[in-house]
Length: 97
Image 1 (spheres, one colour):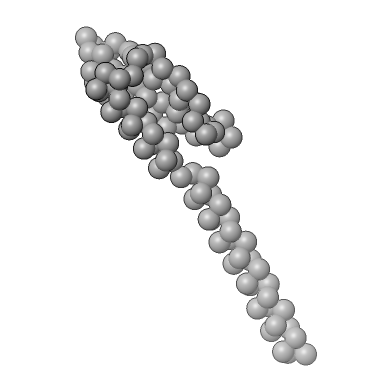
Image 2 (cartoon, rainbow, N blue to C red):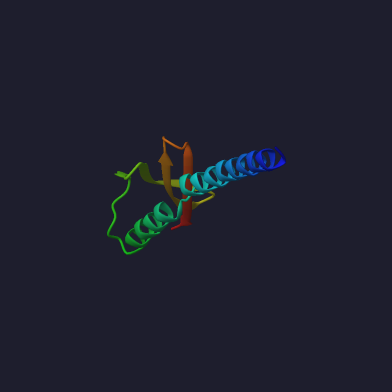
């Protein structure tokens, strides 16, 4: 009887640990913005070398990308932003130009 109870406890502990690890891994994959940040850096490079005309809008995988200019304190700011509607995540890069 003791062996049966110990086996059930071990199985329950492994199931809970498995669910926790699965949740952690899926959240880290959903919140990974490395690829879109690299794409925004590429767009920033294209703009710096005058190969990108503004305003710019595009769809990249699940992301909606927009590049706009704003004037703030007599300086032009170029805002590179990407929004993912599925995860409700926004990534922004701004440069002075």
